[in-house]
Image: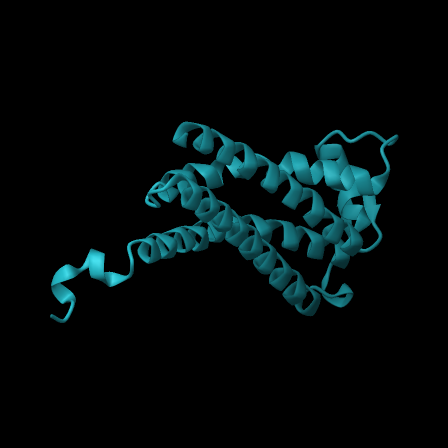
Length: 185
């Protein structure tokens, strides 16, 4: 049963990561459509026949599904600290949620700060593949959000690990089983 759970959790981690990327790109597309139309669509070979928002979602999926493998490599085996199968599944899924919330939070904080730091007045004209970007400040803000969201994914692995470890400690009925000599008699 644990083997099926182990494999299923890797699949779930990849699907969640891909969905996160697709939804994340809807935010960054709103900030700068040009980040996609002049940069990401070319990078990911998104054809002109695909509507821009759909293209942004496809780019997000392709750019992030693999992060589920990275997250899974760390959190799925760590989750095995949780002894029974059902708590293991829910504890690991909860850790995946913690990763998503951490990545989103860090990405959004970076985006908010980028609105304070990156202004049209302090950004030079920007040309991508020979095409001038009409709003270079927005383009750089969207790029900032993307870069910090990856950082958020890696920080999320740490916060997800903390989530699993806390669940393990609770499952061990507090400190009584872990530190029996520390308990008053």
